[in-house]
Image (cartoon, rainbow, N blue to C red; front, side, top):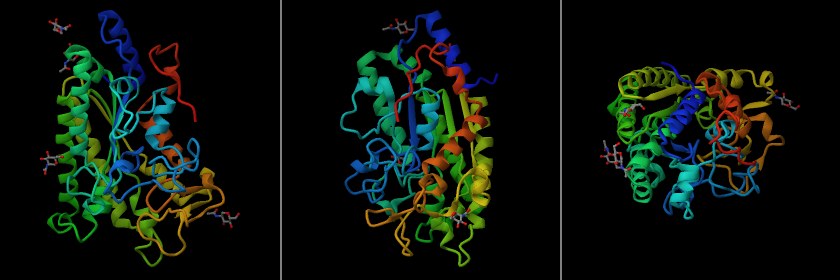
Length: 365
Ligand SMILES: *[C@@H]1O[C@H](CO)[C@@H](O)[C@H](O)[C@H]1NC(C)=O
Ligand SMILES: *[C@@H]1O[C@H](CO)[C@@H](O)[C@H](O)[C@H]1NC(C)=O
Ligand SMILES: *[C@@H]1O[C@H](CO)[C@@H](O)[C@H](O)[C@H]1NC(C)=O
Ligand SMILES: *[C@@H]1O[C@H](CO)[C@@H](O)[C@H](O)[C@H]1NC(C)=O
């Protein structure tokens, strides 16, 4: 049976009332990379991938850097906001407590992290997906000490999970000759290796009580400004885009399979590849004005993370697809979030307080 998230939430609330079960809130746990990081890397003292300088965060809250690799909200922020869910704080946030976890969930995402342990070693410190799952296990034990076995199982089974990684496994691993994966595998065998590793990770998460999960696919990552500078024409890297498509196809199939085999699992896949590809080819059609260069950039010198205090900002951030060399702007993230909501059949409008009394009001901003 196919439940929408809204329907699942409703079913859970009815079930909760019927069985007198867990009185806890539905919250989110987020696993990801820099596209979802909300500050973890800021606390990794030796890590090189950080969004802790202006102009990161310029359109978020007080406009100071907050650890997001974006001018504003991430895709996961926007989806959560639209579903009326609280924003999970960064795992490494020193103020994180058991109560905060039960009220808001946790975000383990870390810039530079990948599905594979060996991805992103260049950044020295980051949480790969296995490490993030290990941290999640620790979180679960912490909650268990607080509320006991039965309530803990219910709390984690009724929570929502997001898994959004993969681009670093290509950009900061397979496509870089310094990494051994680049010569150990070919395009097909690498995608299989990635997808099978992700299958094992999702199965592990299921054994830890994860039941409702959304996995995000990859966008046309051959079109990020950092990839465009690799070609003399400044065009998109075709091979990189083909790898993203092939990953999306394999992951979509894998998720369907995992979801049908694991008991009570609703594991769903969504990608916004086509919409973003169309946005890049026809920015004006979507109300954008630039789809090939970063809004925040440091002239013609374009090393990896170039949005720094000396950088120049574009005039209108809402009209640029890319914020820096890697990451979309908040406006592009909105488009991506809307597409994912549509594709995965999330029904934010059904999640009004009256339909889902336990849902928190949307956070401000
Ligand atoms: C990946 O790293 C985790 C620790 O974060 C470790 O437990 C696991 O064995 C590693 N897996 C591989 C295949 O190296
Ligand atoms: C936990 O659930 C089990 C099985 O449903 C039950 O036997 C046990 O009494 C419960 N424990 C607590 C502390 O409620
Ligand atoms: C699946 O859901 C049913 C009904 O809520 C529950 O009784 C059962 O224990 C669940 N099984 C697993 C493995 O979660
Ligand atoms: C963006 O706007 C500028 C100034 O109005 C214009 O010159 C340029 O062609 C536009 N670019 C796109 C991709 O529409």
